Figure: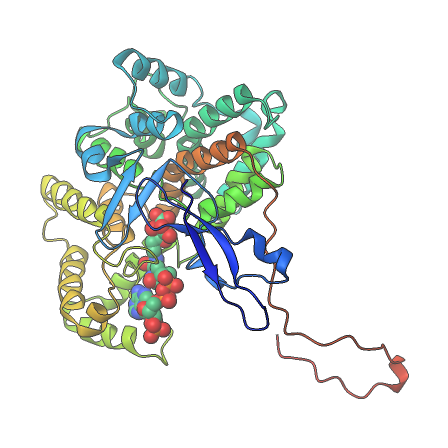
Length: 437
Ligand code: SDX
């Protein structure tokens, strides 16, 4: 923190308001506006475009440079030289593990991958065609009914075992959602397999065969989990922090993050990108869709493009595109029609002045769906994969908030509703001027 100050001149006040300013390691300075309430003012920032909701040491994004750091390490470096579970350790503990620490962490996670047998009965209540994100919202929230031994959020040991359980069980639950939709038996985790191999085994294996997971697809899956691990104060992470600030248990907080991620403006975009590419159907239709995306009167947006923070390339999109080329090349799918449409669409958009002027670049969701489709994952499971990868980020922020000290999150508002008025008897009232809903 520094001793810089901001001076705010306010109409109607005799003297300006002095507000402290703080500097981070990198990034914009922040102005501490907490004193404004005592002066009778609120700040106003719908969508939190200019608001720092907290102090954090986990992830840093420079949207202008297209930079993403996890505990100081670039996403490119981690994607190239690390793996998902090592990145989980880094996000949770702030440093990369030694070889012994890594092996111990992998072993801990491996021994939490099973879920209580009663969980299987929950799925019987869902129709086979229930959206897997609907199932995940319910099932993950319900985990708090099974772990009464670790719900004291003020106990660091409870927080750590909850983190291990959630990281370990999300792939198992995700695969159960898929198996339920296919009418196939649930697969138990196989502790001889790595984290991502195990996930693909639980997704596509059957009790009739020995595990056979392609190393190429397992590597691609691991990279997808890694690229989705954390992204500072995005909508779902902010929701997890807000839920956690009320003292809710970790499973309920993560369920709130899953619910928020589901929206097509956020984690639901990967599913929406595939739907859009299928709707475009042929490269000759691209111009029509780009025109629709630019039309103010058309709600259609180019899914997988744009970002609140990145006003340059999303570095994850670059890594995802490289992985896409690798995976489809190794699978002999480099001529995949959707990939060709995606690449053509990206080229057209990046050369179009509307997208250039508004600094709309491909984001993490633009290519991820094409890889997941090549792996054999159905479109409605894409956001479940995103939630599985992002669970460690949600937990890391939840833990950081509880460790650093917090108050319950309670934003205020600019009220523009009715002034105080008396209630007349119903008999005497004319037809209401009710607003349309
Ligand atoms: C994720 O926050 C995170 O970090 C999220 C995430 C993470 O890892 O957690 O990175 C994951 O959510 C990635 C984003 C996935 N969503 C999409 O791909 C959906 C399509 N994108 C848009 O809906 C939009 O770009 C957002 C939601 C991502 C960002 O919205 P903002 O910051 O509120 O920007 P905006 O809506 O105010 O757009 C600014 C302008 C607008 O035009 P004007 O009103 O200024 O004339 O850009 C236009 C928008 O109409 N615009 C687009 C567009 N995105 C923005 N126009 C066409 N196509 C688009 N995709």
